[in-house]
Amino acid sequence: MSREIWLIRHGETEWSLSGAHTGSTDLPLTAEGERKARALHDLFGDHQFSLVLTSPLARARRTCELAGFSEHAQIEPRLAEWNYGDYEGKTTQQIQQMRPGWSLFRDGVPNGETVGQVGQRAEAVIERILAETEGDVALFAHGHILRILTAMWLGLPAEAARFFALGTASISRLGYEHEYRVILSWNRQR
Image 1 (spheres, rainbow, N blue to C red):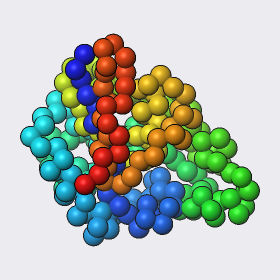
Image 2: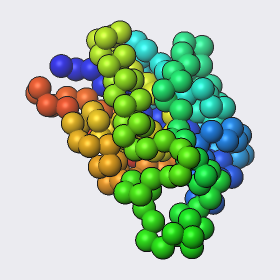
Image 3: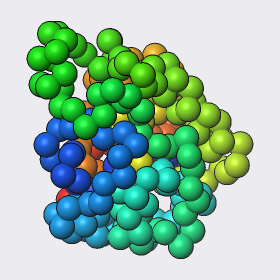
Image 4: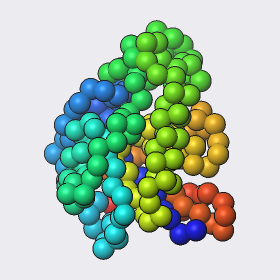
């Protein structure tokens, strides 16, 4: 199999810069986030995608636009970032002051999604990709959903996403080696 899934994390926002958990809060890219999103275009070269999907949130859609793919992009609601519930806008350090030793992937969030629910959304995106096209696919989305999608692609539990660091304005590629699903490249940044 030769199909590849390109994972593109949105450019920097004020909250990604500060480390605040940014789920449904629809923040714009910073000036640096916009610059790096434009620079992604060069990393794609002349690569053609048979399907381009983007999260409905503005930071992912803007990254898609600046990278040169918005004309053919489709909104995929299941690519929205994790719903962090009561921890929306809080940093890990702030949460750990309230809950010492807290870990997102182990302990979850009150009044938000579980890691398993995010994993189900990621699995549904993979199923859509496999059903709709045999060509390469680009996904413009967010750090945690893309990390969880990677875990699901590899057949790992959603919680294993904690092992995959993913920077803003980065490109990663999933695909196959022989019949096995693999990571082809990870966290490439300009």
